[in-house]
Length: 413
Image (tube, rainbow, N blue to C red; front, side, top):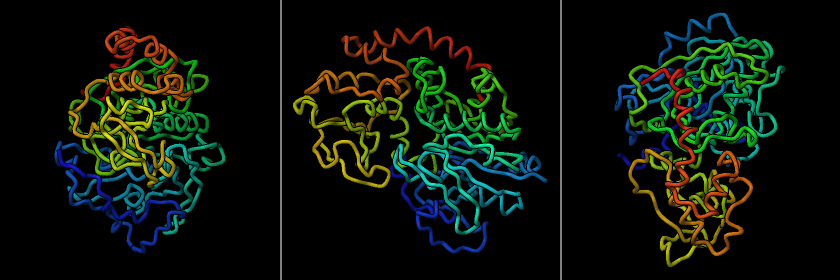
């Protein structure tokens, strides 16, 4: 694996809210390339042709129509192993009538903190309005979709139930169904698409970090997930979205995939993305999961963990994407997993070990843990002293049912 392949050498000429202070003055849309010389081209490495690259498939679908896009810094077309152009620039250069952009959590540049309110804005270069789909406005309104014929959805997912881009997909599909707007999903690889694991969400505990009765790791691409949302009638009142999925070529779920740009501020590399489904549980505890460090979701620690058991130390600092991380400025005792092998299942050992070796068990879990776990059962099991193997046994029936349902929506092996 090539390390540090997400170094910030991209030239984001278009992307960014006006508050980000973008000063690039390039005159041609076609010149707006994001280059990354040290990156391994995922497309070249695996011979994957991304949906966004398949212009011959979707440009005819846009002719004579007003178009909007749901996208962020990951909405890229790969031109060569070290050159990318944003989908927005590609569409405009090809005379598509793109009139509006919607941005998910973290904003269009993808630099906002998790949960941070992102303001609407306007791109100073093109004048396109950028509308936030996070905070109080998670779902496009009828007014925001007025006059739009086609909405393109192009976001890079990481395959975990609590990663909010799939929740944004749900609300976008619902809004399109209610307002007779066509939806086209540009499919991208799921970097954790090689396995399915975890407890199934209890619908009584639905939230923006878990909207559907699926396991923590779902093993679907965005296109496949959209098909499942429609097919299982999960939209309000069972309505159906007019959905088209532009498929990738030469992709299957077993292929390792390294993203050309980090999908959100605290997932800086392939290792963090692979560890994220297991370490994100710590977000619902008093343990820091690497926010405020250069090893986000690759380390975990807390001032309250037993320093004789956890001998790795770090001190969270204020950084882009983590302005006020948990235990800011305090020494945390924990574990460094940055050299851990590739995960193909959820790991509960780290969570249980931390719980068993914290100073104050009563303060270990917080209310967010239930939302992340999809219900209270996992916390109860850990507090009762159940082993990882015993806990995993309770997931068996739910995973079997989900995998049977999943088969009918797969587009790739």
